[in-house]
Length: 255
Image (tube, rainbow, N blue to C red; front, side, top):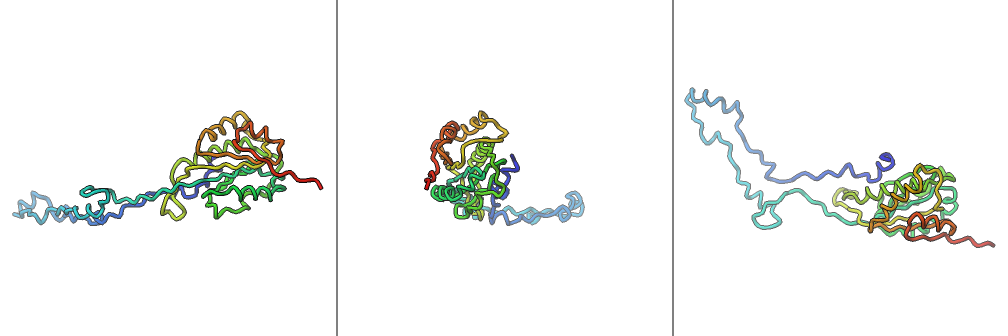
């Protein structure tokens, strides 16, 4: 599980709070070392009198405080830089990665491009295994991210729903630094677009377990779910899973 989600948000390890730039902190107080001062008893013996010159000067930091004050006169505030947090929408494409998907490639791309109106995109593809792509800006989304060369007939939908729940929780968890580390963004809403047959095969988790974790996703009011079936025959199965909106691919007319 950790390996699957390890690269979901690439910049997590870079979320380091910028250090202070307080000019006052740069001024080091000049102190007299012990070797310079010597032992006080020895100096008394030698007739040396400790004067004010040996006492470290206490600098007045009033000026420094005024430079860092921004919330009111006379109030000293931290000089840490606080990045602006921007709310963004994430679209998660949950795609069945089978031979049938490749046959419906054109229709899939039409659906994705029509519904992709968010700031960020993440792909979860499931065939015999589940694969999670990293979060990207919508402008950098590549159609090639949707399809895998290793196409199987089996689709572990229930396992994919379990991974989906993990991704949603991680996405909402905290604010993250943007691409250049200047501002931060926080995911405030998620659209889930499911595409496939709606039928499971070869999942490690059973249907009851998958419905339980998917209910956690559905209970979040900031999440919208849609599922597009290859055929209307799958409507009942997809509805039993809990997707709020269900559609079907256009049927091919017989010549």
